Each structure stands twice: as C-alpha cells, then as structure tokens.
Amino acid sequence: MLTRYPSGIMVERARAQPIWIPTESIAAIRMERGVAGKVVAGIGILAIRWRLPSGTEIDVGFRADNRDEYQEWLEEPV
Image (cartoon, rainbow, N blue to C red; front, side, top):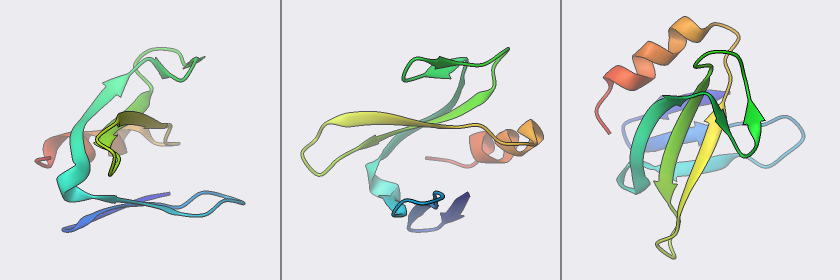
C-alpha cells in the first residue's frame, strides 16, 4: 500500500518492514511496462525512482488493482 504525505511516501508491504521515501529523495514517478524483470501487459506498473542516502538511484514498482489510481500519483509534483 502506498500513502503520500507532504514529507514523503510510505510503502507498506505484507510480511515486510515498511519503507519511507522522503520527498527530497524522489527523482521521478512514471508508468512502466515492467521493473526488476517483471513485465505486465500494457503500461501497468507505477515506478518511483528515488535516491538512497549514498546517492544511488533505485526504482521501485507497484501494481494497483485499480490502475486509474496511477493518474493521481502522476499529477502531483515530485
């Protein structure tokens, strides 16, 4: 589950620790066909590129049950 706050994005995962992505670390939010070797039909993954404290940029991808929700994420400024 993704929740956006003014100070960042909280990523809550089943059976795993949550991930906090600070707003200042977010480089881009976009739609993708796949990430990390996982591909879905059409443009089905919301990808967030963000910088770790080391400066390394990584992508994390999410697939929503309702892809109409992606538009809200894409419209908000990074």
